[in-house]
Amino acid sequence: MRDFLKRLPKAELHLHIEGTLEPELMMALAERNGVSLPYGSVEAIRAAYDFTDLQSFLDLYYQGMSVLRTARDFEDLAMDYFRRAHDEGVVHVEMHVDPQAHLARGVALATVMEGLGRARRRAERELDLSTAMIMAFLRDRPADEALTLLEQAAPYWETLDAVGLDSAERGNPPAKFSEVFQRAKALGLARVAHAGEEGPPDYILEALDALEVCRIDHGVRCLEDPTLVERLREEAMVLTVCPLSNLRLKVVERMEDHPLPRLLEAGLTLTLNSDDPAYFGGGMLDNFLACRRAFGWSREVFLDLAGNAIEAAFMPEARRTELRRRLTACR
Ligand SMILES: Nc1ncnc2[nH]cnc12
Ligand SMILES: [Zn+2]
Image (cartoon, rainbow, N blue to C red):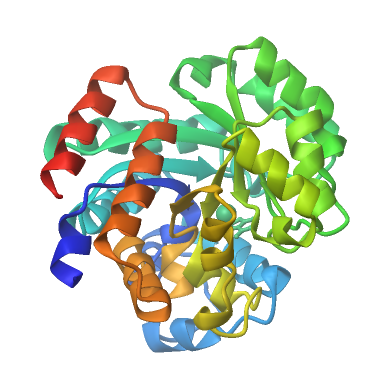
């Protein structure tokens, strides 16, 4: 099964590029940029990744990215991840990026976008890996800051596939960002949002109605509202589920308790993703393997989930056709 899951052409729709920063690269970049870290070793960094909830993770996630200073750092970060992903059979990566977290540290938007842009072009050329970019707004920051960022990103609108909404969910409902998402819609950008990870099912509803999203990131708490589940099913709304993330952030106690089998049973359109692989103990293949171990799913289930991701991805139709063909060849 491991062999099959590795060969399966996997499209990753929910990944934070800053969450791919492995401790080894964090140490190397700290040294390169003269940034001091509160850890003496790679082992000490890994040992600190013992999270109690989303906020306890976000605190370390924002601290970790302090080593990213130059365009070359962002290029190295993304290329390192693209190579690892490619090695485990990932064929397409859609990365969230959190510009506000970098602007707040005095790193220019151009530095971030140009570094990531270079890595995207290299991934296509060197690894036959297609990519998409989702510029995310931090929901625990003011809405007008998000609007300013969207306008500031005008030179990069062409390179964006969507806007997203992430960071601390509780107390920051989607409707706070209605105006900026309306502006993104007017610019022809697709919209996605984290909702129902730690926050209530009502936030999922709000993301659908106030933000007009085409995908819900996480969404696992929808099961608490049967009417919402029925709507998600009817609309074939895609949920980008991240099982190892949910385990490490204590959304679930054990993988065996994860709602994935119930979500599947409810007829929802699901995809499997890694979220922040450097922090949550594994990439795409590990997430697929964790599901196999916990739920005993057959090849057919994994083929369906991988197919959902290819269908829901932001990619040119020619690429989608090619990936569909590669998925069929896996059968
Ligand atoms: N799992 C997650 N939820 C919300 N914001 C995030 N930013 C990075 N990872 C995140
Ligand atoms: Zn996420």
